[in-house]
Amino acid sequence: MSDEYRIQELLERDVYVGETRVGVITGERFHPRDELVRSMRIKVVDDVAEEYMRKPAEFAPLSKELVHSIRTDGGVKLSKSMREQRRWRNTVRIDEKLWAPDELLDRAVLDNDGMDLGNVIDLVKIKRTYKGLVIQPHYIVRSRHNLPETIVVPVAQLGRTTARLDEIILRCSMKRLVTLPSYLKLNSEAPEGE
Image 1 (cartoon, rainbow, N blue to C red):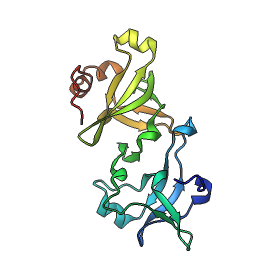
Image 2 (cartoon, helix red, strand yellow):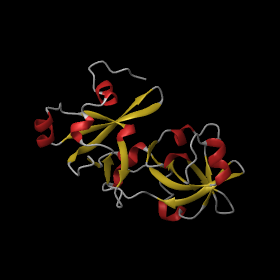
Image 3 (cartoon, one colour):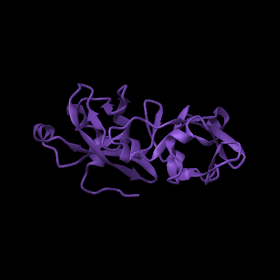
Image 4 (cartoon, rainbow, N blue to C red):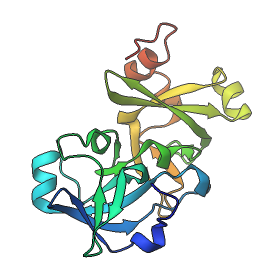
């Protein structure tokens, strides 16, 4: 996104790809570190969601770098066609909500017992799909569960986020997580790669 466009200037503006209205900018997700957020939130028009998303969602992340210009009618023009909107698929789904990778970085991860496991430092992508979050466990968690410096938590185990959206809650306890086949596969010594 050009430095001249700030999120406050773009709020509540219609978003267009070519002449097709695709949604309305609603703002950004709260993040404890603003410098990490490179995405805005867009309320997607129903028929666009049905046609271009595998599982339609009401809101989706929109990369700020896709903003091309402001139209004469005040709408926001994007720089890619709908077919080229690969970034809309470059997301992680948590509790039926779409998250951009930058919105997940540095967030705390808790198991379903409320134990703070650590923070998200990266994501693992296998064959163009995000399969896991790379977590840097806290020392006490590492020593208690005999974990390495980083672990990969399967995306399928991400249950929900807290109201302030700064914590990610898993579907299971840490004790159960380390026994899951998906966890064991993602944390094996031989990563599959893309």
